[in-house]
Length: 293
Image (cartoon, rainbow, N blue to C red; front, top):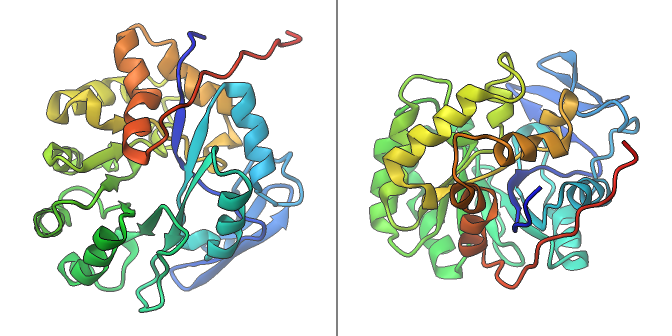
C-alpha cells in the first residue's frame, strides 16, 4: 500500500466484557462468543478464544495493517471500561486516544481522557438538550465528545442546539450517521459546523450484506463528501466486532484500493483528518511487513 498516516477513529477494547443492552446482560462465553439480547452471538473473531479484547492484540493488527494510532470509544454492551482504558493510554500514549463512557449519571469522568462517549440513541432521555451541562464541561476541559446518534434526523435538531451553545467543543458523529437508515444525510450535514467531524466506525457492518469491497460504502463516502467536504470525514473500523468476517487489513484496503477516490482523498479519510482532530501530529508512516504469501 502507498505510504500514508492511518488513524482508526473507532475501536473498542476490554479486558472483561460485562455490559447490558435492553436490560439483558452481555458477557463472554469463550471462543469470541458473547451473549447478546439473550442469545449467543459471535462478538469477536473466534481466535480471541478467551474473549479478552486487549490493547496488545489490537496493536498487532494495527502494526500489520500499518495503522499508526487509534481512538478507543465505548458502548453499553461492553460495560464501562474507563479504568482499563486509562491504563492503555498511560502505557501506549503515542498509539491510543481514549474515551470515558457517559452513563446518565453525575459521576462521568473527564480527567485523564481525551474524550467522552455518549451513546445518544440508547439514552433513557432522548432530549439531548438536557446534556448541555455535559457538553459545556467537556468544552471547558478541552476534551472532545463522540456520539452515536439515534437513526436519521431524530436527534439532529437537538445536536445543532448543543453545537451552537458550545462553539469551541470538538464533536464526532459515529457510525457514519447510520448510513443505511433513512435520513442519514442529516447527521452528515452536522459536519458543516466547524468543529464537527464524522467517523465511519461500523461502515463494513452496515454494508455487510454487500460485503467486500463494499462499493456502496464507497459511494456513501463520496455522497458525504459532497455534503460536508472530505476534510470532515474519518475512517474507523469498529474493531473487533467487524473482524468476525473480514481482517483488520481488509478494513483498510477497501478504502486504499478503491478507484473511486483520489489518493489525496484517501490520505485525508484514512488519517489526515484524524491527525488534526485528535492532535496526532508528528507521526510517520509505518513500514509494510513482509508477508509469507
